[in-house]
Length: 260
Image (cartoon, rainbow, N blue to C red):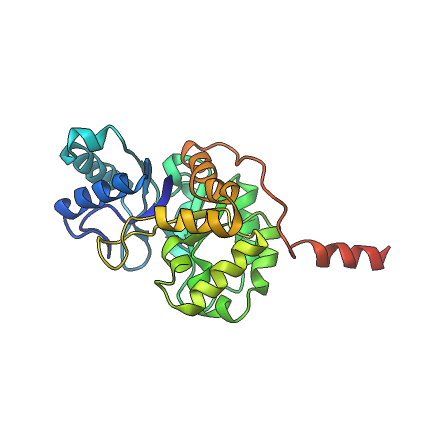
């Protein structure tokens, strides 16, 4: 399994507090069957993003790993990109600074409440410069929990979607779990990730959720969401062929039919 959203780097945001914890998080992830981790600290008004520093911290973690763990894990770089003004301006100047492993995939995070009014335009602008935005954990956003309708326009514009393993398991409450399963049923999800912050309340675990997805939606979906798609993102290549999402283009087709 490949985890593209993981707050592994220590001492720079609300994730791992120290090197010892980071090493233990990697060990826990490897024991769970995770082979790749993208280190994705927050990039927002509260936590400044410094890619060179992040690379240094990643190297420290890698060097501190026991040999039998180090040989089983590959660490990459990315961030939890917030759509604030300063970030967006810097993104224009440094297109791959915030992306996963310097390729074209970018994790973007909404506020816990509310959504940007110009979200569709932002997604379109990113597409114009060959960036592919991946929206992180929309199932946990209070506004989208009340109405998923905005997701339709965003996904039609080319946005991909990542939900949190803990949401599927119910760790973020019944509403997040309900929305996560609704999106899985509609095939609106492209990735499942841990969004790990620690070893207890938000651990680096995916295996139980992988098995739950396989049991309810099929092994192909579990492998696609937890391994094949995130590995493509890690390597910076196009996603493999995806199943047709439900209730995403039907309305558009109906409008075209009546307009004809």
